[in-house]
Image (cartoon, rainbow, N blue to C red; front, side, top):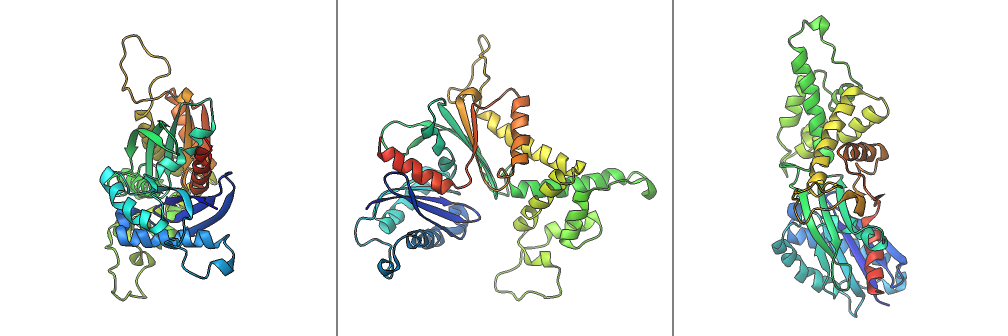
Length: 363
């Protein structure tokens, strides 16, 4: 039997799914992070190898799984599709295809991980375009239409973001955490012109964040944020604060769950303000890909933009896995005049991609 493999390579984990020709999922597996830009080629290939092996062993009888499964001794995969975070150029794709082909015995389709989110475009006749919107460890939005020819190919129309945590990742975990600290400090700055007795900066978000880092004053967050990353191979001081043992990116991205709890459980005004800012910037990016529903006389729009009324918006990532956060995004899009024809959340992009790949083989 020939299998259809899809691998979702993300900044937090690698997920894989294998389907048969009918689209039935036979096996699933997970491994460590596999953002190509962060890991480099050798570590990336190792993460993929471990994950695909785990996926195969999840359904192949143990008697057949004693020997190494990759590279396969006989043809194993009919097709493979990789969505890889950190792959943003033809040059990066060209670097990945030869070692992945050698590993799998078949040349895979390799693209940015947002391509997997748009797989539902093949499954609905009432939409002509898709937008994949990632908001999890990082953030990016990409628009697509169905490509020509066979296979699960999607034609990319436009993309915005995906620059990584230093430069962007709007709407993602780092952005939410950074904005939370910024707004806590901004409130403290504005309160500084009042006498101490009149400074009212009470917030459950502020309380949660200060407790998380074990500090008592908002301005101690400056030390928390700017403390250097721990050095590899250097013995950690057991008496040092816990945050000194965490890299700076993770110190801030770890705050996203606290922001969500304060906003959606406590109704905290500061937390809601933070999410209003982060969703606003992510919606700014989505709107770059869209055009108005009604074409004004004489108005010119970029030819690769699309109408929301003809589009399925496909969310993916841990943050947009929270329905209340998705609602903030959709409400802001509606306020700006964009109501999507369809909206879906892809909780397992690898499964969606494997099914789409098998479906493409039947057309």
